[in-house]
Image 1 (cartoon, rainbow, N blue to C red):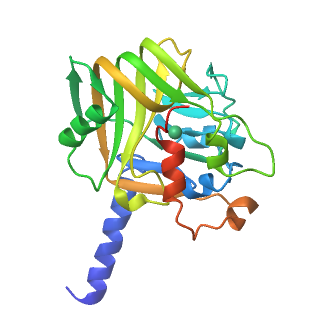
Image 2: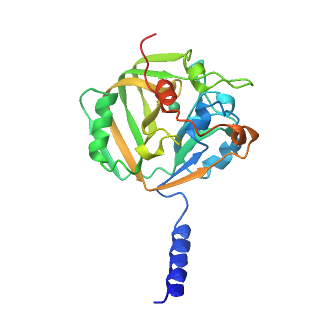
Length: 261
Ligand SMILES: [Zn+2]
């Protein structure tokens, strides 16, 4: 095969891969986590548009108005009052990650496990740390601690300032679903390395960004994702935000459980 035939062949392979479907085993992401940390809360991708890229995922809403849970194709919005709302699908998101959830593996717990224990088990069941992993856990929780964030007005403060006074919610003996992702270490700056999980109660009345929990019994389903697509905002805010800084310290303060209030 001469050089030109090889190049033509490569083009054909790329073309076929493209035809295989854009959403299967793909994490589709809007914007970057560092842009969100820096206060880029004005989105330009509608929920209707996001929905075309998956039926499962997490994120936030325009102006940082609460936590997003996309489950079985339905968007849920956990606002700062801790309640769950049905968002307007014409509304937009400044940061989200979604996929078409087609789990390859399922496993369960019959003994109580905390967040660290659950993550260790998922790491054993889906051992490749360099691929993305979509995670769904349906179960009954002895405790569930979440947070949400209130909507912001311009000039937008950085997320760490908002997180310092974020409302948190403590639930007990609640049934519901964990929705989230495990991302590889190499996404630092782009998404959240490691686990990022949201919760929605089975009766659709409570939820949020998970800080801690104890699972009583439950079943996990995991979908390993080997493709990653990003949609970057074409907004003035995104054009102006400084994404050269290392914001890993900020991220840790914002996403994880902090010292007790
Ligand atoms: Zn979150």
